[in-house]
Amino acid sequence: AQSVTQLDSQVPVFEEAPVELRCNYSSSVSVYLFWYVQYPNQGLQLLLKYLSGSTLVESINGFEAEFNKSQTSFHLRKPSVHISDTAEYFCAVKRGGTSYGKLTFGQGTILTVHP
Amino acid sequence: DVKVTQSSRYLVKRTGEKVFLECVQDMDHENMFWYRQDPGLGLRLIYFSYDVKMKEKGDIPEGYSVSREKKERFSLILESASTNQTSMYLCASSLEGGAKNIQYFGAGTRLSVL
Image (cartoon, rainbow over all chains, first blue to last red; front, side):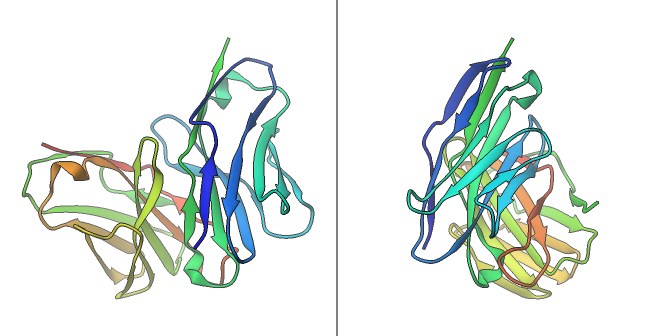
């Protein structure tokens, strides 16, 4: 079975500062990795995903994440955050193969961007 | 755009009541999922379904059951609600066809059991 650990439950940061949200996973098989974002009072939205190929993946709103197989990590970064990035972020892993697309989620990291 | 609709945003129920949470998706997805979300615990899978009338237990199925009579609708049932089932419940759906498929989420139902 796989597991996901998000190392920070809350990350406060000032606007325009860089941010990194950390995610480590454990799995004995190949995995696919995801970051989802949940804005206040909304459901989860996919932010970005790693399936194969380039280990650096990017979202349309400036976030990026790098798959590091040796360190079993998939940290999320943004060089300059905005107030509108305030949300809860979830890292998730899906086992390679079938398993009906079951996701295992981390505990979530609340990012709060201050003016 | 894929749309996953949960019928209620907020529900308040009494201990012992039978509770139905409804979820409908409009993209002909084979897979549907029910999660509960609690602070500090992330999302935990309760049940999922990969076809009509088919269901599989997730990580925390105790106290819950599900029903999928039609492809687009997946219901979560609390047979006798208890206070420890107060939580946010999220429904999701995805296409069939392997682990690469993306899950799309509804807005959630916040259930309070008093």
